[in-house]
Length: 160
Image (cartoon, rainbow, N blue to C red):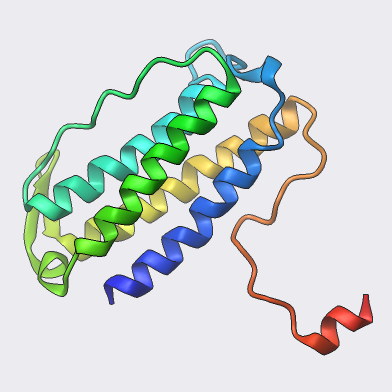
């Protein structure tokens, strides 16, 4: 079951990296409204929140989010997200089914690890959707599909 969650998450995280590659350097601090996340903040929030959820599930109790390093450029944002992605892959690799059944309190809500791992994926999807809108608002024209697609069948590829 952990492997299924991991593969589902990875199909979304891979697209996050692809999407960030489409965002120009001049848009790192773009905000669609004054109180919203900037482009860079939103990307780092996605990756940092996943880290918080995974650390919490691993430890069986709430772990405050790590404070990511500062950034000034989209390249630095991409590096931070890549670092979190590598850490998240390692964290997923140590999870066992017992982590999914353990009750954990986060923000006063108690639920099994399975609920929180589903929430981390939902949270990432939610904010990645926002990032797609940000990217379009700043002129990105060639954006990836929302989730990594499976390989094409040989016959389908020939039809193109």
